[in-house]
Length: 250
Image (cartoon, rainbow, N blue to C red; front, side, top):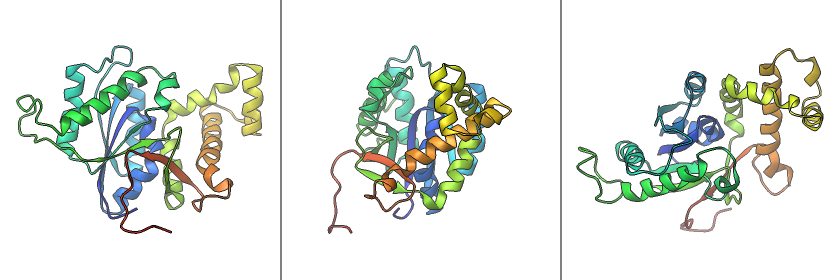
């Protein structure tokens, strides 16, 4: 990571703060400012995320959008334009344009259109009367999180314990993972394979915590396990546009 930047995550769901937690935390520790705005979040997730965000040194605000009604409307664009112009990010993290098409989380497809349109409009002399005191802001570098086709990774080994602790705080999400074994006999077999002590754990929270840790270790450790990446734990991203270098990097 270079010296700290103003880094903004525009996320659909709360867990995305933790998914990008390595990059957000390293930016903050390097003297930058990390902030997230989240479109969809229930009350329990907001309470949980407050703990995670503190661990990740990242501030969070909520857009209070409806996952089933979102339509990339003018009002919704204005909400994100205001966030961008107020925060004035150097770097924007958001969901992958490819992955969101087949992801069955509701709201992801219109949210992607909404985010890209808002980013584009935020940098133009648009809706200035509706955003008084907020000048246009454009030119931020965009990175798509957990992409189908990454072209860079962030080495997160030094902040791995904090990223795990931030995930451990999302109890509502972990309890969801802890119920996976009840979906079918095949799902239960998979849970036992990932977490050998599955049957001996007492609660959905315990089971989900162990399951998510196993899943994350596999996912973020995959690039290193291929023998083609030096980062033991790596958050994958896809940078939008060209990398501009003064010289070739090692």
